[in-house]
Image 1 (cartoon, helix red, strand yellow):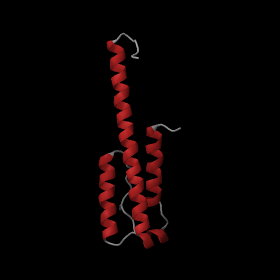
Image 2 (image 1 turned 90 degrees about the vertical axis):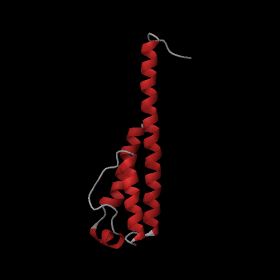
Image 3 (image 1 turned 90 degrees about the horizontal axis):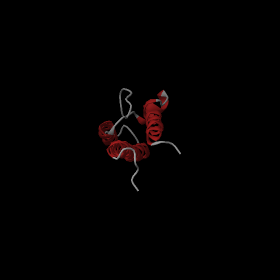
Image 4 (image 1 turned 60 degrees about the vertical axis):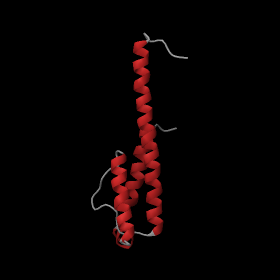
Length: 107
């Protein structure tokens, strides 16, 4: 199973492929959400992406299906990102606890 960071990287690639690496014909038919390529690296980026997605949908630049798909992927990205942050915090707390207990484990 992939780590949370690996899942974020894979999902970001999927989102970017769907939005940024479309061929010219598809881009003309569907429109694109971002004018320039940007990696989703945190929840602020996904919020900005979602705002652009909503605006593109509102202006009829993208289809219902594409808006739904990208919205779903952004939701997954946010969930994975939040889990990744929590995992990192837990690991830091475990390290602090080990140092404070002279290397003994809780349990």
